[in-house]
Image 1: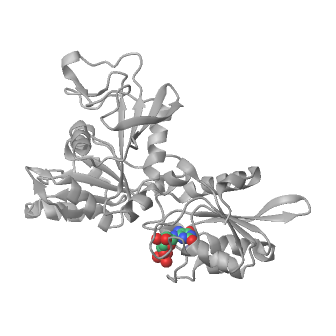
Image 2: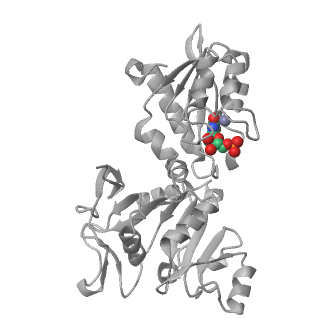
Image 3: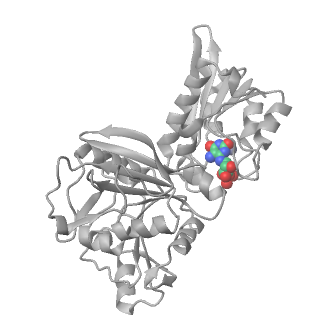
Length: 377
Ligand code: AOF
Ligand code: ZN
């Protein structure tokens, strides 16, 4: 097996193309990772992509069979760039490693190993045994990020949790009197909608649901169907249909974690809006967070974006349940909020929470977007 030290420029280019393609179905493949496969043939005119595909919505078919089908006879002697080690197990379809072998692919280049214990090295071994050359490249952050929910869920019982906050440069995230503050610019908002589409679920507490009355959907042109499950923590089952999260629930899947013994009238109300009431474990008057995430993971949710509020963010950080923080810093030069009415996060853009560090800084319109990750010791 070749290692990344013999990496060549065109391998990197085609693998990067496959990684970009894999992002297309992020958040749409259920418990299956979104994987992409790009088949490249050496033709008279040079290297040509003759087939490409991404794991289908819902997770099947996997990426390799449709990519090979598109390539047809041109797959013989070609190179397949796959963002994850091809599977080796007989599931609803034959192993993708075998499909690549049968198609006569000469070489397979992969970005990351598959931790699924039915695969975990077996995909590569099958290929090598059949005389297919295998090049394991380091897909780096790009490969990890697209399947971070899958990787986290495969290594334990919790989903990957992204905490998303909009704040001003001083860490102000809201106003105690008016609730929601307009902090982010249009471009930041669009990025938030895109991020929603890439997650399996969006989570908020009841306080935010009532104070801000958000929709939490993806409203980018042409992407309305990509809104993920909306999850609300409402320990006392107080949310009513005066709020958008309830009244729009017939169109967007909505789950409420609340008391196992709500009033009958409340249960009838949420049933009418096709909301799933999930009986929660209540700890000290609040939904118990680790158990709630375990429950989500058991329901196939592998990535969750938390969008509020301040108290929930703080509790999640204290319970060490956050994997990544996205901070949109906006509201420049100053937010229209009185000092004693300012609601603050427990950290500022310049001082990430204990154990986190800034790993990426992007500019969206007037705003700066920071990605914070747990520091690797
Ligand atoms: C691939 N290509 O596009 C994907 C793979 O339930 P199944 O049979 O669909 O198997 C799910 C497992 O398949 C999943 O845990 C992961 O190991 C692999 N996903 N493999 O070769 C793909 N999505
Ligand atoms: Zn497969």
